[in-house]
Amino acid sequence: MAAVYVTLATIENLIEVKPAVAEMVCERTKLMRWLLSKIKIREFDGNKQYASEILAILLQNSTANQKRLGQINGVDVVLQAVAMYKSRDPKTQDEEEMVENLFDCLCCLLMPLENKERFVKAEGVELMIIVMNSKKSCYGSAIRALDFAMTNYPPACERFVDVMGLKTAFPAFMGKASSSLPFYILWNFEGSRRERLFSKFVENECEKIDRLMELYMRYSNRVKSETERLNELELDDLEMDEDEKYNRRLESGLYTLQLIAVILGHLWTSEHPKMRTRIELLLKQNKLTKNNVKDILQEYHDNIGDLDGPEEKDRAQTKIQKFISAF
Image (cartoon, rainbow, N blue to C red):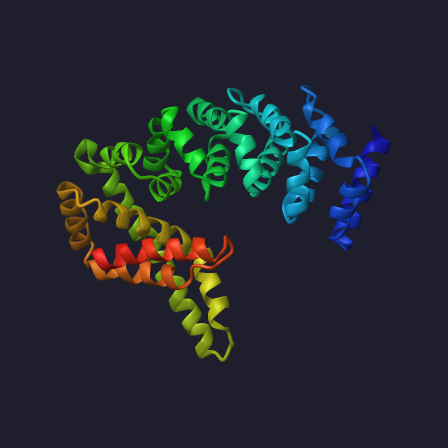
């Protein structure tokens, strides 16, 4: 066991010194298969913990490794390892750390499209819903994994709605976890599934729109404070280009604020009178106008990148422009 630990430590140090080693070691050795065999073991020990940590490091910034692990049944194996905690909490801090590593591995694995497909086929969506429903310590990690699975992948959103995931998503949204799951579902849907989601926003006197506006105000205030802070720094002659400034604001809550504004855009363009009346009332109560939401949407529109290709960028910008015009 000591020899295994020392070997893994050596690999970790090599990657730290030369990040390119992460892909090289997976390409030229059977390290990934060995790591998968370690996290498969039911009993917890130090080597299993370290194996999960090394696997997370290997996947972190490497699309090649993410794809490679997917091809050797990695999605299934990581899901099986996570499933051991679907209805129980880790017993020690080390075990807790290992479970976090496993969820980090899962989220990294869910970056390539083909792995999202494997995740849905392996009933990963259903497993994450079970984890959320058990309300154990992995609750937040399961939401994060679903966020990754649903990003730019409508089949995961469809599966989520079809297996009654909305019943689980909205308690998360109403609770401490300001889940972005409604964003992905609305973004990817038309037709009856979308209507099912809209119906959730009007039940119980539109309480979910109230929650949405509560989150809007919280993140709006955070972003405002950060913007003021950055402007003060500039006055102190600390040069900062617009991209850096924008990224700082995204990190301080602008990204979440944009998601909320997009959800409001979806609700507004549904032309549902009850939802529109509620949104207008809440904006007025918070001394805001529709222009505030428009400004957030406009900035989001102007900064949509083409990471997913020019067609996807155009599609996204057209959708956001529709919201801006409607407001």
